[in-house]
Image (cartoon, rainbow, N blue to C red; front, top):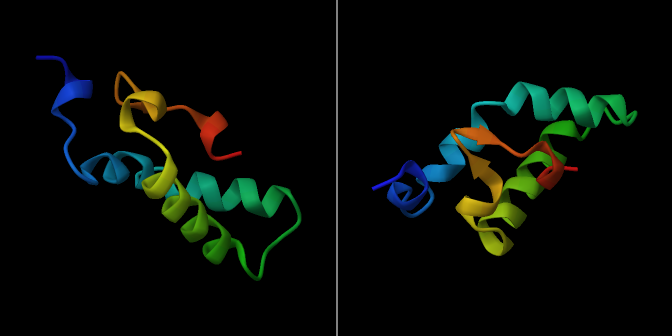
Length: 68
């Protein structure tokens, strides 16, 4: 069984959250510093609600396009 099919529940969000500091830096690059954490947390919520793990994670790497 391949890795993508073994990801259950919200375990896949741990893989996404490993790059939390990178997501914060991306928000900072858009010029937002005060609410960067809030924006990233909202992105996580939307990923949980609307995305599927096999679309976001390929070979244990997160597709950065989903966070933009």
